[in-house]
Structure formats: C-alpha cells, structure tokens
Image (cartoon, rainbow, N blue to C red; front, side, top):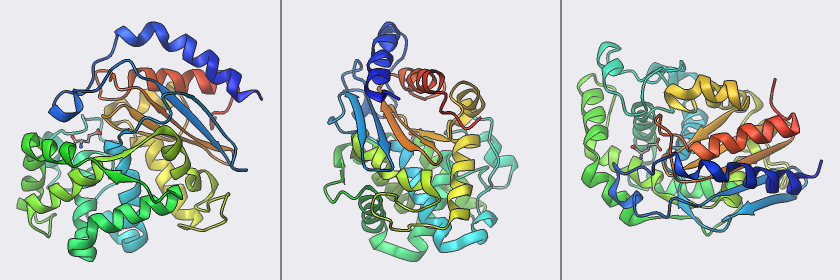
Length: 305
Ligand code: GLU
C-alpha cells in the first residue's frame, strides 16, 4: 500500500473543510493557535513512519493524556479501579455535571473529564507530589522520546478558567470519590492535559496499544494483552465523548481525541496513527481530524470491522 500517496490524497480532500470548525476557546491559551494547520502521522511496527503536513509542530495533547493516565492507573489498581470509575459510554458532553450527580459521583468512564480527574486522584494517592513527574516519565517511555514536556502557560490558563472541572472535582469530593485535595488533583490533571507533542511523537507513543501492550520496535512490554484490550475497547466506545458512536460509525477504529485538535487511533496488529487540526466540531473533536481518519480507513480498508 502506498501510504504516502494516501496521505497526500487525504490532505487535498480535507482542504474545503477548513472553514467549518472552531478552535477551543474556553481555555484562553488554546485559542491563540493558527486554526488552519493539519498534520497526520502513521507509525508502523517495523519503525517506518509516514507523515504529512505540520508534523513537527507541537500542540496541546489535552484529553489524549487520559489514555496514558488510565493505562498507569489500570496497571496500579487492576479491577479495583472500577469501584471508582465505570466503563460505559456517557452519551454526555466531556465536561458534563448532570449525570455525575444522579450517579453518586462515579463517572461513567475514564475518558470524560470527571473520570480522568478520578484517575489522576488515584495516581496522586500513590505518587503524591511526584505524580506529574511519573506521568511525564511514562509518556516519555512509551514514546521513546525524552524531550516531551508540558506548556506551563496552558496549565495555568486551564486552572484560571477551569470552572467546570473545579465543579466536577468538588462534586465528586462531596461523594467521597476524591481522596486528595480537590484543587491539587485538578491542577495535576491540567498539567498532564497541557503536555505538548506533535503527531510523530503521539503516533509513536500509542504503538504498544496496537500490539497487545508490547512496543513492536523495542520489544518492551508496557502492559498485559488483557489491559491493552480494555484500553482499546474504551477508546472505541468512549474515546470521543457523546460522539463516540459517530466516530466508530465513520472511522471504525479505537481512538481518543483532545480539544487541542489531536486524535490518536490504533489499527490493531498493523499501526498507530495521529492526526491534528485545531478546529473542532460541536462535540469538541477535531473536525478535519475525524474526516481525515474516515478517509484513511475508507481508502485503505484498515478498520477493525
Ligand atoms: N483539559 C481539557 C478540559 O478539561 C480536556 C478536554 C478535552 O481535551 O476534551 O477541559
């Protein structure tokens, strides 16, 4: 398959969509971005990668970080994790408060904000003040890249304007589903959301999920095959908030989006991918990124179905 040619076709076909989306503006530091950027990277098992567009430009990974923190927590807590967080799609917006109230502070899944905040709280239980250092270390390890870091301005901006996330953490605390100081936990969460990476690094970072938890390039085992199955299943059913069904319907791959405009996806047994374009659709997922992935699976036949 000529992957480079397919990427070139995709880049041409998404051009007319640049007028349609809107960059995330509820985090002021995110709205400064040039909206007309696009990058896509494919990472194969033999180490080959294919890239197109602004692939060296780093962006805020935002909710893609939830995949890494959940992986760490699953490894630490195993099945006990599901006492604090569910594994069902929410059918609600990423930052919704409503469901959380009538479900007694137990978030539906680890990929909505409430679920990711509980995940971070569980990491803080274990790692205390070293939590962010541990998260960064894990991401650097799975990416095989020590240069990855976070954007302090974005983390500060999130804390300053994070009214909803502060409401979520406090509500969960009132239901005893947060063990540590609420503001501290949410700031840890903002820090890992503010990690900056480009599509090359992100596609590389999730390659282990395409290969039962083992990095096929270095042969390092990061998690068990069963854990990798759980994470991929959750990406498929919950990776795009209340548009998760729509993403599965159009793209047919496990994937996770972030409001920075990135989406990672996995073709089990074949490759991992990342696409980035900052303009979002109404559900908070990259509009062009979703379309690019749909074009990719249509042109290559590489969906899981
Ligand atoms: N840090 C963002 C927030 O909590 C993450 C949301 C996202 O990427 O979907 O609002």
